[in-house]
Image (cartoon, rainbow, N blue to C red):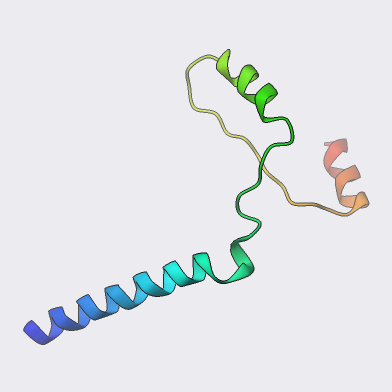
Length: 73
């Protein structure tokens, strides 16, 4: 049991370190946080919204034909 717990602890530390390094060093997380172009206006609008749960959809940069199809919906 002692050996098992030691392996679990070592595994947890390895996963934690890998996750931290992947987040801070590797470039694949650079597009996860984006700033709003006009953040002050968005804050002003959101301040007057009723209390509740809201979903803000996000889509990536698409081609012109994909955007046309999306806007047509």
